[in-house]
Amino acid sequence: MAESIDAQAEARRLSRREFIKRVIASGAVASSASFVMGGMAGCAPRTRAALAGAAERLISIDVNGELRRVDVLPQETLAMTLRYKLGLTGTKLSCDRAECGACTVMIDGVTHYSCSTLTHMVRNRKVVTIEGLRGADGALHPVQQAFVDELAPQCGFCTPGQVVAAVALLQRNPNPTREEARQAMAGNLCRCGAYDSYLNAIMRATGNTGEIHHG
Amino acid sequence: MLKDMMPHFDLYQPDTVDAAVTLVKQLGGDGWVVAGGQDSFDWLKNRVKRTPAVVDISGIAELRGVTDNNGGVTIGALTTLAEIEAHPLIRERFGLLATAAGRVASPQIRNVGTLGGNLLQDTRCWYYRGGMDCYRAGGNMCYADTPQGQNREHAVFGASRCVAVTPSDTANALVALEASFVLRGASGERIVPAADFFVGPAVDIRRMNALREGELLVAVNIPATWAGAEFYFEKVADRAAWDFALVSIAMALRTEGGTIRDARVVCGAVACTPLRLTAVEQALSGGARDAATADRVAPLASRGAQPLGFNGFKIPLMENLVRRAVRGGQA
Ligand SMILES: Cc1cc2nc3c(=O)[nH]c(=O)nc-3n(C[C@H](O)[C@H](O)[C@H](O)COP(=O)(O)OP(=O)(O)OC[C@H]3O[C@@H](n4cnc5c(N)ncnc54)[C@H](O)[C@@H]3O)c2cc1C
Ligand code: SF4
Ligand code: FES
Ligand code: FES
Image (cartoon, rainbow over all chains, first blue to last red; front, side, top):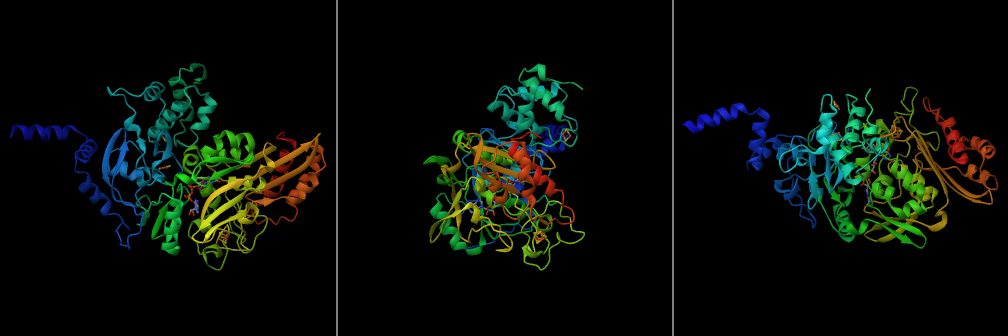
């Protein structure tokens, strides 16, 4: 009795979103997810004589260093799987058309738009999302810290994608010029226009303080 | 815009070219080939085109990579645009292609988009992309070529009912470099020169290239002909990233003792196919690569152009791009 009251209080303390995330992460994956997906138009599986090379639905994908078992529809995009089946809602979905960068993740160290990647295409590859950037001790990634220190985001919606793109850049080129960073970040739109702040944050993360320009 | 799942398709992921060719044959017209998917998924998400089955060829290792080919290069169809942009052999011999690949879309799209997909992508005419039943979609009118039609991006050459333009940045470079395309189907392999591969609406209004149903593009061969030549690529678009060309130019040039010996000049986004400016090429040969030559040949670029209501600006733009190409970039 006392236990269940504690549990209720705990649940009340959690934000709704955090609570849903925990439920999803706690092994109820297949059922809660198929509820979400099952309600979507045009998803009813049809049958066709099996030809060699047909994809299996139950697959394992390596996300943030963990092997996650997940039931994936043939037409499912990685953004959908991450957000609605694996509870990784840090990856944002905005245009869903490869036109904004909000859904940027790293696959084998290279940036991709997860809205325009089939989950089935990433079997045997390593996916890193915004959630996978923090250190083992939970500390922010230095790029995240620099974004905070520079007060870089405005509304913050594009920020996870911007951070992932910046981290990928610095893994490839630890010391980019501001102009190189600008080119590398060209696939991430910001509706608030915080581009200069983001570049300042990247310059801060690399220690290149000479290229930080404030207003 | 819809942000739900794409309609269902069966997914096949063969890992050899032979298996893919067999699958595509077995599926008949029902198998949509996806390489990077950066063009394909838009069509499927928007429900403008549908397919019962997708053949995802992205896992076929033998279709990736760049190899030396007697002083030229062979590029596997699945090689990404980012790989092409960065590849030492391509940069050294055919910088024109590396530059063109680097001007496509955005870094993320270049990380995934393949050379094959870039060459085979469908036109960006928004009436057609929006699902209108125009000529190209099998209907009986062109919405772009009407007095009110929004045709700022459309063709000034080679119209035949349809006035859509080629969207591919790499196609123009490959036509200039006299590349050829290796195509494989169930009945074997054939090689088609780039200049014959892209087709306009007078030849086939439904397709922009000579790929036949059931065929895969396997590789692109660039011969040694233009290796290490002088190159110029410039793309004019409304935005620097993520945007298709309004007009682009790809030029390869050989000079000898200050005199132009041979040139290939190709314009993008002015016709349904990459457009070789043969009159400009001929007029260049024997001239010096200087401002006087540039001014002399530039007007030849637009000879025969037929502008629509809103794209007349493409004519001076083409001429200026030729001028800049010949001068080597100075205004
Ligand atoms: C927002 C946005 C901006 C863009 N900007 C540009 C731009 O500026 N310049 C530009 O050139 N492009 C641009 N594109 C298009 C994009 O670059 C190309 O679509 C990309 O290179 C396609 O490659 P892919 O491998 O992803 O193609 P896919 O979508 O996989 O394939 C495209 C087409 O080619 C066919 N195909 C692909 N490979 C083969 C093969 N080996 N054999 C047979 N058929 C094949 C597919 O069936 C499909 O019909 C843009 C796209 C988007 C979404
Ligand atoms: S230009 Fe071609 S694709 Fe566009 S509306 Fe006309 S016929 Fe259709
Ligand atoms: S949501 Fe993927 S690029 Fe916009
Ligand atoms: S901070 Fe608002 S969209 Fe970038």
